[in-house]
Length: 172
Image 1 (cartoon, rainbow, N blue to C red):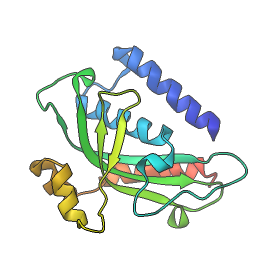
Image 2: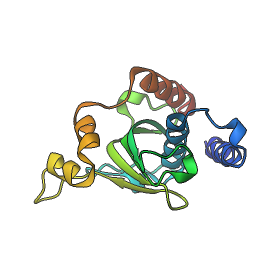
Image 3: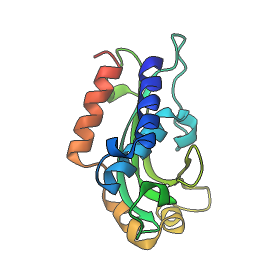
C-alpha cells in the first residue's frame, strides 16, 4: 500500500513537471490534484465529525478518495498554477486489507483546498457546538458553491471509479 501511495505521489509530481501529460481541461487537472492531495494527506488532515482511521500494525493503509469540484478562485484563470482556492466535496475510504467498502472508515464532506501552499492546505466544513453545519458551510463557501455543496456529492462515474480503486487497494 505504501508503494501505491509513493507511486501515486511520483506520478502526480511527474504530471506537474510535464504539462503535456496533464489532463487537457483545468477541471480535470484540479480534480487530479485534489484527489492526490487528499490521498497522500494523513487522514487527520481531512478528518471530521470525530471519525478517525483505525490503527493497524501492518503498515499505513491507503486512503482512496473521490472528489467533486464545485468551483475555484479566481474563477477566470485558465492554468492550474493560477488557481488559489478550490471548493469541492470529498469522500475517502481507508482501504485496510480485506475490509469491504461498506464497513471501511470513511471521511466525507465539503472541503476547501488552499492551492497556494505546497502541499495544498485542506479545510473541512464542520459544525461546532454553537454553529450548525449548514450555517458553517455558508460561512466558509461562497454562496454559489455553498448551494451546490448542500445538494450534490460525487458523480456516479466518480463514485464507481473510487470503489474500483478502493477494492484494488483493499485486496478485494
